[in-house]
Image (cartoon, rainbow, N blue to C red; front, side, top):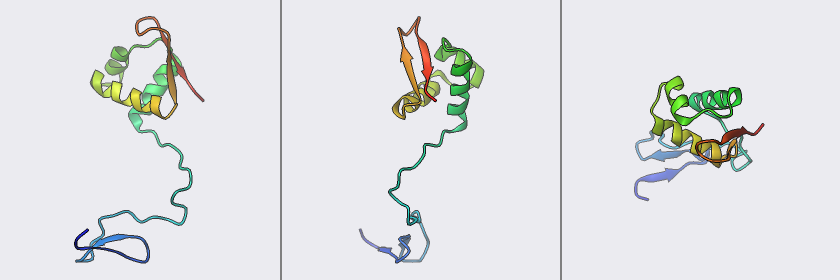
Length: 97
């Protein structure tokens, strides 16, 4: 990489001294918890209150697009927070604790 230096505190700096990287703590690489965004927390709360809620209903309640809800649900599935049981039409959401 051109014009980039790594300092002793593991902060990535440009030659002019401005930080543009992230400072890594001594615990970097240790298992991190998963932080959910506000939308994901709302989705989980709705699924806990009604396991048969549809993506369209969640979209209307939360106030964002159906596609944005789908993306957040995919993220929740990837981290193992939720699972879909049954068909798309008659299934239900399982929220893992």
